Length: 432
Image 1: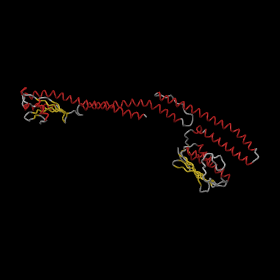
Image 2 (image 1 turned 180 degrees about the vertical axis):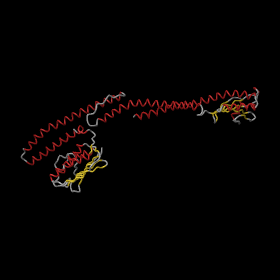
Image 3 (image 1 turned 90 degrees about the vertical axis):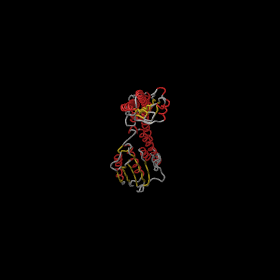
Image 4 (image 1 turned 135 degrees about the vertical axis):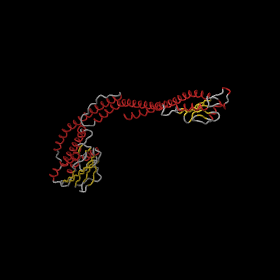
C-alpha cells in the first residue's frame, strides 16, 4: 500500500510539474529571444548612423568590429546595387519589401529571427532603389546561454518539489500503513498456540482505530464462545460417563448372549463417538491452529508401540521405516491417532496369524505411510473413508479420522489390495 501511494503520488506530481514547468521553460526561451532582439534594435540605430554618413569601407570596418563583439547577432548592410557588407549578403523578397515600403520588419528564420531596417540616405525624396537595408540576424538562445541556466534551475526546482512531495506522501502513507500492519500482525498471532496477546492501542486515522477496536471485540467474542463450547463439551463427556457406565452394568446382566454382545457393541460405538467429539473440540486448544510436527520419528515411534502386541499374538510384523523426513502439517496427536487407527483395524479385523507390513517413506513433499495385511481384504466397492460406515460392525470412525487428517495436511488416503492378499491402506501427509 505504501509503495502504491508513492507511485501514484509520483505520477500525479510529475504531471503537475510538467504542466507547470514546460510552459515556463518555453516562456524563458521566448523572453531571452526578445531580450536579444531588443539589444539588436539598439545596435541598429548606431549602424543606421554609420550607413547614412559613411562609405562602404567605413561601414565594413564598423561591422567587422560590431560582429566580432557579440556572437549571437550578425549585422549586414545590403546596398541597392546588390553589394552586401557583412556575413549574410544576398537579398530575398523580404529585403525587397522592406526597401520598397520603407518599413522595418522582424521575421523568423532558420537560425532564429532577423530584423530588416531600411536606411534613408537622401531624405524623403530618396528613391527606394537608393535605400540600403540593414539585416540583423539574431540567433535563437540555446542551452549555452542564460536559457540553459534557467532550465537547469527549473529542473532542480522540479526535483526538489518531487522529492519533498514524496517525503510528505511517505510520511502520510506510513501513518496509514503502520497501524494496519500492526493489526495484520495481531490477527496472524491469533492462529498461534496459547492465548492471544491483547491488541495494543492503535494509532492512525479514525477508521483504522475503529477497525482495531472491532477486531478486539471480535476476538473477545470468539474466545468467549470457544471457552463456552469447550466447557459444554467437557460437561457433556462428564454427564454421559455415569449413564453409560450404568447401562454397561445393566447390559452385563442381560441373559441373552447375542443381545448382550450387540448392546455392548452399541455402547462401545457411543463411547467412541463421544470421545471423538471431545477430542475434536479440544483440538485448537491442544495444538493451535497451525501445527508443525517432525512426522517420521513420531510415526516410527508409534508403530513400534504395537510391536510387543504383535509378538504376544505371534503375528508376523514387517517394518520398513524411514529414519528422517520433513516437517508435516499435522499435530503429533493426529499422527499417533492415524497409526493407531490403521494398526487397530488390522489387529481387530484379521486373524492373529495374518502377517502385517508397515512401510514409511520420506519424500520431498511429505511422507507416505502404507499398512498392508494378509487378511481377507476390504469388500468390493466399500468406501472405508466414509464416516460412520463399517464393513465389520465397528463404529466406522477409524479410517474416516485418518482420511480427514490426511486431507487437512493437504494429502490423501487410498485403499486397495495388497500383494500379501489382504487390504492395503496408504496415507500421504504433506509438508508444512
